[in-house]
Length: 500
Image (cartoon, rainbow, N blue to C red; front, side, top):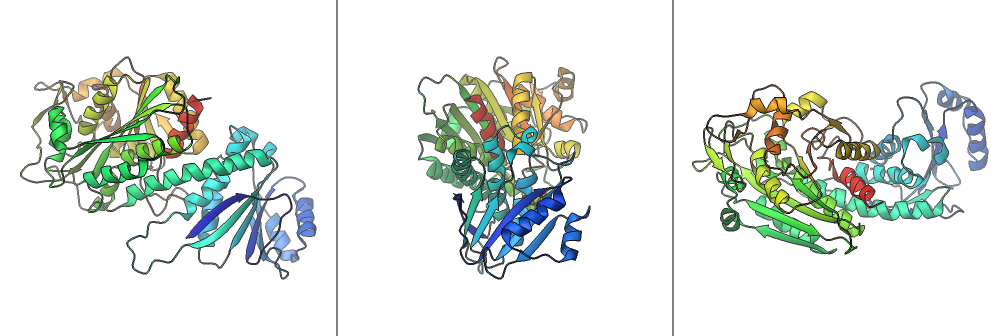
């Protein structure tokens, strides 16, 4: 792990000792001549075997040592622009690169960004193209080792980027530094063990981190939650010795004339045992990250405030620990919510939607222009879409298009699933207004339809089920070991686009 110092490089490159340089070459007809030109300009020597391997169909990279130390080593990477190329290419490459050099004594890294003209169709702007390189380094460099006795001290690494447009490059550096600090904050919350990050600790951590930058944080304790008749939060949190919290974050934007108010709602279950309907023990430890929606909401608002986005944001996080005990809510219970609607409990492991019912009702009463909730809500969504894609549920086509566009750009990708009213019959009940679980069929959809009961129909609303991509997965170089922070870059892009 490195302590990264990201900077825009000068037009004239100056290599200090222990430097590495990366150059990218596009795989095209004149690749051989381009390689010869690079060899000449950089004054390196390649064997015939190295050249042949690089120019072959399978070859993709050469690592060359320079005895004069200017730089000490040069990486030449080949890029194939074909139907497999995506906006995540450079982000993923540099995430893997920094992991591979993590144990080396490198002090300086020089990255030459290729010309934007070759990649225009994959990126919304030249500046964002630059940002993907920098994001890759931060994502690949992330580690959560605070509890290891023999953890290694982070080594300083000066990183210099070079690109055609210096002004856009400087802007990309500043935006990336701001955003990735917030992404890492969210990831730290996700990866914190649940014996440490109980609901009150989550509230305190969010309050202490976000108390700057023009953000106001209010925390309702169990007494206030009871006063507000939020029976859903009290029911789910009642089985734990760690009482629930209801966190409200307000960012008023930098422009007082701004009329847009976006409500972001995040599920904050700091540990989900399943309650009385207890989960199997295998991989239950991952349920420390069942508060990923909460982490994303907090990280996104912090990033928006640091970037001084001219949009008002209301963050709402119901936080509980779902544990089995003599005080736990039970299958067969009927829970009364602040909305006045009742919920029949079929399964206590479908608890996230119960606490979100209170948060969505609270958000609706604040009359925002749009509501977006994020939750690690259903395994059914992972079955449907895999581990690396979030489920998108909304009846609003415009909102769906805006979120999908932001997802494609950031590679925090979403896929829209149906919200037809045909599914309502699956969560009907004779004893309450709605039940918290349908049949095994369409589980992610019926969860979304449940939530719909607690949203003002006049307000555009989207539900993002991030149960798969929030968790560590083998999809790419920056999601393998730790909880991923999926959603922060997505929502920040969405909010930034709203202000354009």
